[in-house]
Length: 429
Image (cartoon, rainbow, N blue to C red):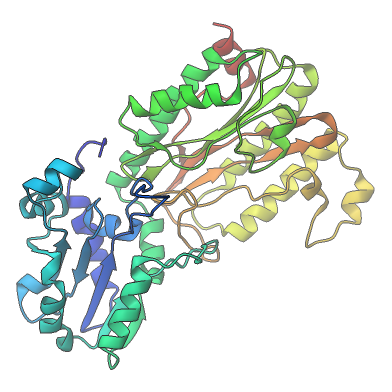
């Protein structure tokens, strides 16, 4: 890993919170992600399962975490099972966690090799009444590919059919939504790295550069600041490309007079950042571009102001829709008649602003958390309004990451240029 070591106090606290949420006499098991194949003997870069990372800090394949608060012996209350390392593995694959390193990383004292998992589990599982298993229960989850957790569930429920099986995901969705101070520091670091990339590219962008050249500049800045890279597939969309919400080809030339919409964020220690800026390729906004940009920025500021403890995301998005409608009326893009006769299920503003304004962010870019309960201090959200005018070859979106505090919010990206004057000054320095 490129990131600096994380104090294991974070993972100790996370396990305590999780254990308190379990039913009595319960045992929970978490598996690492698979290393996914490409072709021949190729593999994709490994990305750890966020839940086992959240609870242990172990960032390595073929790992299992067991949490059993009511275990009959102290050593069985928390256990890690790791792929056994040796000198030969170190030569071919690099250093893996030793038992000592795993204890230092996680704060878990009982560490076994993976070959001991089945016999150890069999020795204690009959002392448990409930078995908590993990699954990807994200609202947008693609469950086409079978995961290590899926295969494990098939094996365990066949091997031990008489236990009561429970879901870990609802507990973790609630816990992970509220960040510990250590997590906020890691997210701030990701945001800071993203800010450095913005500073770099604002000096680089000019007519004639390719979108992928800008992507290369961003990646350079990420890597040199201990980020693994992009937290998600970056969008570098110039001209009409900005009107394609998930444009990721990034293969077109940036032309004089056009805007370029850039949606990207650094990952740091598995934590994501998520930023969008829209800037003029030639370093100077036209009057019309300023007009639309100002409308988006106004909605962004108004939306951020109401994102505070107690509001639900449903009522928040409804209010943001009203804010956007007001701006679109001022721009002449909507008429009063269109608003009056709009379909409540697809309001008139959706013609020019068709996506949501905010989502949870954390270990996942679209992080877990309730969309129905009032939001709480410690959650982190994006705020990302946009206006897309296909007939004018113009798409503008702006986005920052916002920490919810007890009395309001804190902008984790407040140091990154956002105002028209700041953008133009940085591009023409």
